[in-house]
Length: 87
Image (cartoon, rainbow, N blue to C red; front, side, top):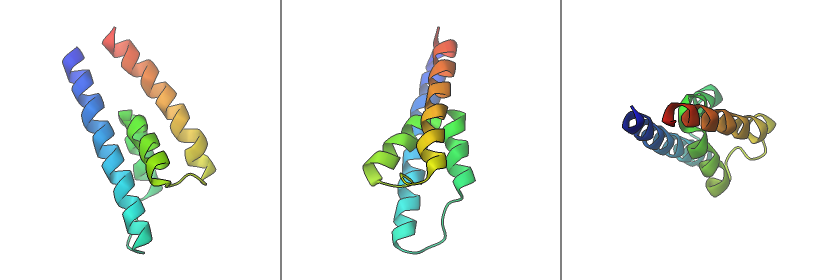
């Protein structure tokens, strides 16, 4: 089970980073955007680290209070849950 949890952690965070990066690219090109609900869902199901890294590296959603507060809180929740499943 631990391998599955680690694999999930890696995959969901890579996906979350890619989706956030793609949304930033779409914003610059004035194309249809990825809903914020989708970005939060990715963070909530274990990809908060990927979302947070993309926020900082791409400077995306960093002025949205819901992301500035919500994503770190989801990261904390993710850490607790990952810790629970890995011990």
